[in-house]
Image 1 (cartoon, one colour):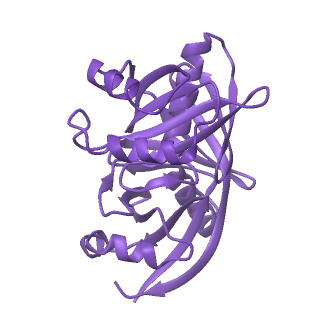
Image 2 (cartoon, helix red, strand yellow):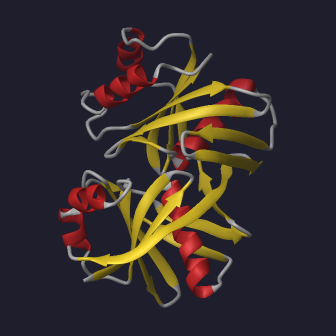
Image 3 (cartoon, helix red, strand yellow):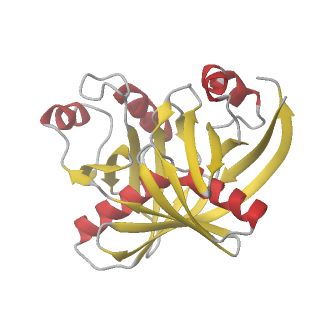
Length: 263
């Protein structure tokens, strides 16, 4: 039997397993394990600690591997704080080390934009033929994971958005898939956001996509806003940028349940 902790990071739900050598088994059965949770999980977090160093591996709900996961890292930070009392740690991921910290009920992580650019012409042509309209700008951003961010004038129809996000996972210009995010203005200083995640589908929130959205807004608006606020389907997230290219993501984390299962 394997002990698990079931966390939600602003509606992004993860099964957290700690100190295990059963990664291959978890990887092989990820889809079944995620589907068996109520509500279904978006992925599995495998958190190990050796000599005061934390290592986090992320398995998506379809069994694919993610280099990192913003809300998954926030859930890991909340768990570390809950079990050790630590308020600031470095968690190592497949995309590199990530600064994490806990402040009251909110877990924060620091993500760094490594690349931000316009999509290839083939991508732009494909999107121009899609049902998506009123698009102000489209950017690709890499923050550990690869993201396609579309800044729109208003919230898109959800069925259209899900269909587009799913179709982009099977195009030759994205052979490994991509996270697809819609972003639109709501109230003053707040934006709506929804993401179709590679290996998962529509999710309650996506942390690295939210930081990518803040990077796009900062470039598009050409302003020096220190913080952006976002409303995702799963709740509210805030992104603060004190240093160019470096973004602090914060939001709530909740422990849904604990238990055990057989892999």
